[in-house]
Length: 116
Length: 108
Image (cartoon, rainbow over all chains, first blue to last red; front, side, top):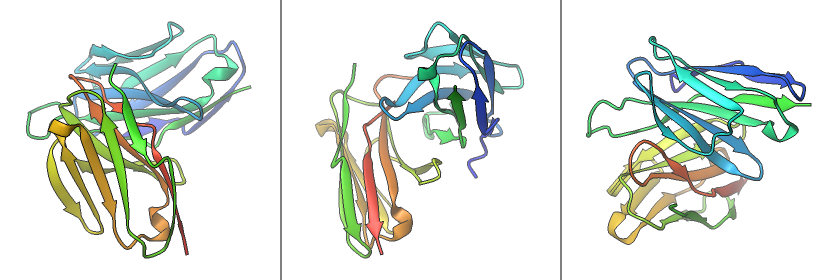
């Protein structure tokens, strides 16, 4: 168990709908990363937050948004869903506290999103 | 952007065999990790290794940052080693870029 919690584990929804994925980082970790894994695109970086602030952005669609709350949990919101958004969405956390540990990532078990 | 290539893309081994997986990256990096994605989809940390050599049981890893590659060695492979192995690199700060992965199948 990595200590990173993601909910829900599975989500089935229809095109055009909106969903929210939730992530609780490991205790004490300040950074949260979101990744999308699909069969044809591999693991794609979406966005990173550090202590409530957005710090890096990757290939995140405009229909997607995220935030990190004061208690450090994060939510990824996906709207106007399309069939191609079906994928495994991972959250990861890292300490981001000192140069010794660096940015070591710990992954949650993922949310499998199916858009029908 | 940085390119991260892993080889071989697929590997089939008999139980007990040894293997070497390679990760090449096209630019300098600050951090590098190896992960194992098991058949249930979980991503498990293997090594955090921006440079040097580390060992953990039957697994070891070496990163030569100046030559832009990392190697993961698996000795005496077991069926539980099956899955996909990813390297991930952080070229600047704040985001890891994942390689294409090596899919390993170990036969009993």
